[in-house]
Each structure stands twice: as structure tokens, then as C-alpha cells.
Image 1 (cartoon, helix red, strand yellow):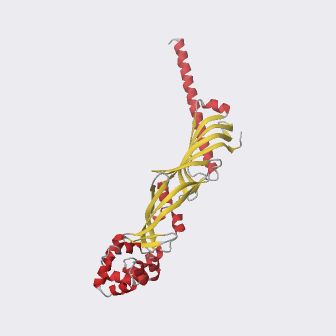
Image 2 (spheres, rainbow, N blue to C red; image 1 turned 135 degrees about the vertical axis):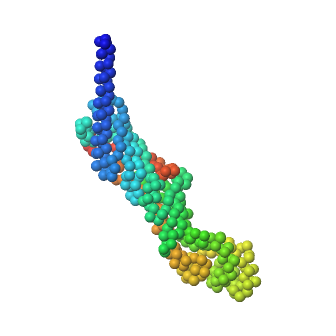
Length: 335
């Protein structure tokens, strides 16, 4: 083999060995960084660290890294866990005796995002069998079951996501309702109300015994728009009763009656309407703050993540996503 060819092959082999050594050094430092981050941040799972730039050895000599990507799964953040935190740290100055010792660093700028996954919310806040799904760019729909007095009632609400300061996310819950399927809906809040479904109201209008039971309660008859005298006649006269129930206004009026007082004061009337009085009484004791807390998707960035701020938030099919930013962030002993 000609001497020139041997020289070329030798150079190529040396170059390949240099590249291999460079990559091995990168992998070694990445693993050391992962172990250090897991210990420092007290993470249950080690993060994934990727150091960019070639050659790595040159960066080591300069004690400057162009970019380091960090992916951290399952970070505790108040009541819930962040499914994943992805960060890109750029222009990092090191206080280190590489590759064996990293004492600290300063990150010139950082960007990234966090994901609050609906799957985790379902698991962590799902004691009431509630499921979350995206509903617009900043809203989450919650649907599920809630145990009330030994029975499951359907729960529905909207959670609107908003930034709280520059390190947290808060939730405003609206449209809260608890449904006894096919019978009635309870809406908690300032003007709490328990109202019949249209289907149940139509069935009641066809049942003379139930209509008479309603008319026996003066306050209910008044809310139906029926004066005491015709209400009294209807309780005795089928023709008069039929005239009232066949009026096109009767069923809508029946669905507009707030049965909260009746549930507490006339349990027998509630029972005649097909509603379990125990369930109805338990429903009316639920307050909006108490129910809203069950659906709170709020969280704060961990205290250890100093210097990181939330910039934008949004709702995507997989969950709630927040953009992260940071500048001139120091870790450990600054160089």
C-alpha cells in the first residue's frame, strides 16, 4: 500500500477516534448532569440531558456550552404533577473542572414548556370519576360522576385557565351543574337552584296525583302562576286540573321552579316528584367553592425552579401547556 494511502487512512482513523472520544465525553457529562439534577431537585425520575455542539472538548476548554436540552418527567407542582418539563438552555458559562466536577453555571437565556396532562389530572383529581378535555384555547371541560348520599350524580363544569403572576396558573370554574339523570339539575352558587328536566316535568304534568301534590303547596302553586282559588278547585276537579296541565305554559313554568326550599321543607313532595329526598337535600348543601376546589387545575412552579417564569398558557388536546422563559439564571456557585 502506498505511503500516502497509509497516511490518509491513519488520519481518518485518528479523526474517528477523536470523534468517538468526544461523543463518549459528552455522554459521560450528560449522565453526570442527570444524576446531579435528580439529586438537586429531588426528582423521582432522572431527567434526560442532551448537550449540543461539536466538538464538545472545545466547549469544555472554554467552559462554555452552546445549548443543553433538559426533559424532566413528573415534576410535583402543588396539587398536581407536571407531566413533562422541556427546557432549552443556551449560552451556558460553567464553573467546573470538567469532566469530573461541575460546581455551578450561569444560563444566559432559557426557553421551554411544561405540560399538565389530562391523563394525570384524571388520575390525581379523579376521585370523583371526573374526566377533563380541551374546550377552546383556554378552557377545559370537566364531566363525570360525583357520589352524593350513596348515589352517583353527573357533574359538568367549565374550567377557564389563566396565568397567575409569572409563576403560576389559576382556574375559574363556571357553568357548574349536578344532574340527577333524567330528573333534575342542581346549580350551586349565589342563587342555587334545583330544577326539573323538561322530560320529567312533562311526565309529572300527565300524572294527576303528582300535580295535585304540587298544588297542595301554596308557594309552589304561586310559582306556577296559579292563584289559590283555581289551585284549590283543581285539587278537587279533574276538568279544572286538566285545563291547568294542558296549558302550554305549565311545563315551562314547572321547569323554572326552584325546588331548593321544597327539598328541605317538603321531602314528601320531592319524593312524589320522583326525586330521592336524601339526595336532593345533600345536593343543596354543596357550595360552589367546595365543588370548584375539586376541579382546580391550578399550580405553581416549584420553589427550586427560581428564575423561571411562565409566559404564555394554552389548552391543547393532551392537556394544559405553558411556555417558560428565563435569563441570567445561576445554579450552584457562579463562575
